[in-house]
Amino acid sequence: MRRFIEQDVNRALTPTGGFLRGFSFSLNPYIGCAFGAAGGCPFCYVRALPVARTADGPWGSWVIAKRNLPARLEHELIALERCGRLARTTIFMSSATDPYQGLERRMRLSRAALALMAAHRPHRLLLQTRSPMVERDLDLLLALGPNVIVSITLETDDEQVRRRLAPTSPSVARRATTARRLRAAGVFVQLAIAPMMPNCAHRFAELAASCADRVIIDTYLDGDGSGGKRSRALGIPQLYARLGYDGWFEAGAERDLVEAMKSRLGGERVLLSRAGFNAL
Ligand code: SF4
Image (spheres, rainbow, N blue to C red):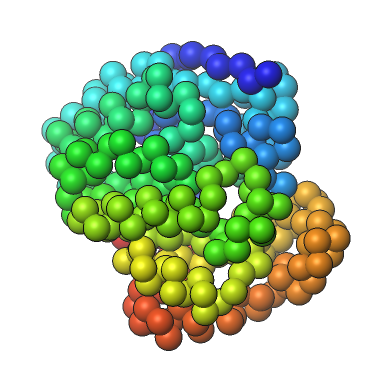
């Protein structure tokens, strides 16, 4: 049984560093992850980070909504605007949890944040999600215009792999449809292939060409913030061996996909790991 908790916070925007150091701030309307229920994504290293101990119970069993986030955000955006920094400000939403999980239907905190940023525009908002619910906010994404990039997480093009490794997440086809719809409406869309899972390189490149302006390819070894140690501690190599995905955890496993994507999309539309995520 999942617990939903409402809390007040002192700040909406958090200064970034580390993997996202190219951004000024991260913005997380929620803490916790509904996609992490019942085991969720076996590759999820967030469950081992301090943020996973914000509430009692395993990662995925609770979600906290930052009830007063819109009021705090408005105050902070206006302050940035007044001191002339807003036009240089870059925001990553969200870094630790998905801004469009089920609770958003009722709380509408992500929608409220988008409305505020449409009124007080940062230089760039990168909105990352795996949920088709983002389509609900197309009106606000269009209002943000060139100031927003929507990043749809899509770890593989293989639905069987998705079912095994990200069983609580939306299907490959549904996420691609969301990307296609947003892009067709005029939103700049990237696919975040992160972490890259077993895939068919040429088929994946065709899929990306049909629905995204650019792709970012990231691996467990480059992207888990520990050179693969966190993923090893979670038993990913053993899980891959059990599933017959030998070799996909190793260094260089992304090479075929990178080549196929470059050849189909052009090199400038294919970005890698940390440098890619920080390309604004
Ligand atoms: S969606 Fe992200 S945060 Fe949630 S369980 Fe999966 S990997 Fe972890």
